[in-house]
Image 1 (cartoon, rainbow, N blue to C red):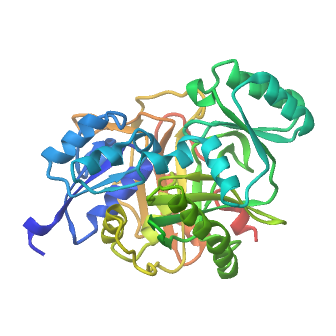
Image 2 (image 1 turned 90 degrees about the vertical axis):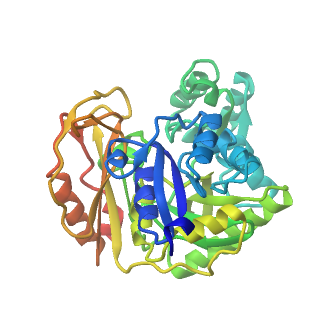
Image 3 (image 1 turned 45 degrees about the vertical axis):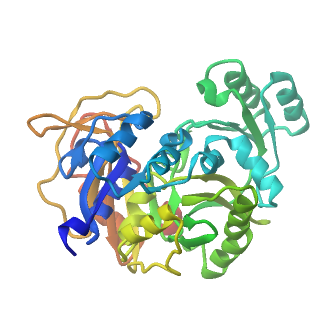
Length: 428
C-alpha cells in the first residue's frame, strides 16, 4: 500500500487503554501516522502527542482536520458523552465510538436502567432518585445489602456496596446532599445486590451488526482477595472459563441482540464499543451496567489477543458498515497487572521517577497509564494507576508468572500492586 493511501489515526485519551490502542493501531498495515491527544509518557516515546484535553471538543476536531486524520479512535467516555463523535461527523471525519445519544448508556445510569426496563434486558431491580426522602423511603422497603450508584460519570468509582442500612443511608446522603461525586451524584440509582461472578463482554458494534471479543474479568477492588474500595481496575485477564460457548450464545441472544434492536427502536444508530458488565447469577445472566468504550484495564489483555488487523474493523464500525462475521484470536490467555501509586484510589504522590527494565521478555508488554515524560526521557508517575504490565502465554498461570516477573523489575517510590490477579480462574 502506498504511503499516500494510508490512514492517519488519532487516538484520544491519556491512559493505559489508549496506549494499548496506539500500539494496536501502529501494527496495522493500513496505518500511516498515529498520533495521540493528550497522550502520556509512554505514548510520547512512540508517537507524537498533542496537549489537548479530552474535554476540549473544538480543539480535538481542529487537530483531526489539521493533521489530515482519517480515523479518530476515542478512548474514554467523557468526550463521547460531550459529543466528540457528533462534532467529527459534522466535518466528515469517521470516529470510532458512539454519538452523544448512544453515550447516554454510560453517561447516565438512570437512562441505562430505564433502557433495560423498556427493552426487557435482564438486570437488577432498581429505583432512581434525585430527592433524599423518596430514596430513603425506597431503602426502607429494600433494606441492605444494597448497591448505591451515582448516575453520572464517576471514573468507575461511583458505586457503593452498602452492607448495612447505616452505610446505605450515609452513601445516599453523601451523594444527594453532600458532594461525594459532584454533579455525577445529583441523581442516584439504588439497586438490589446481585450475587455471582462478574464477567465482561466487549462488543464491536455497527448498528445491529456486531462481533464479540473474548470474555474477560476485571478486578475492581484495591485490595487482595477483592477487598477495600472500588478503583478503576487493578488488573484483568482473558478468557474466563465461566463464559462457556453455550453461555456466550445465551449472552448474545438475551443481552446483545435485544440491546442493539432496542437502540435502533429508540432511534440511536449505535457504533463503537458496547462493553457489558455482567453478573453470572444462579438465576441467569444479569447486566450490571453498560460502558460505551473499551474497558481499562481489559483493553490491555483483549487487544493483544486479537490476531487480526483491528483498524479495518474499527473503521467499518465508525462508518456504519458491515463487520466481519468473526475475529481471529491467539490461543492461550493474557493477563494485565496494574502498578498503582500507594494510596490510590485516595490521595497519592505524583512525580516519582520510574525505572523500567531495558528489555522485556517475549509476549510481555508495559503500557503507561498515569505517566509523564521529562525532556531528558525520564518517566515519572502522574496518576493513581501508573503502569499496566501484561503477559500472554499458553495458560493463565504462565501468563501471570510472566507479567509478575516484569512487575518485579519496575521500580518507583510507593509502588503498589495486587498479587492475586486472576485468582478465581487460577483456583478453579
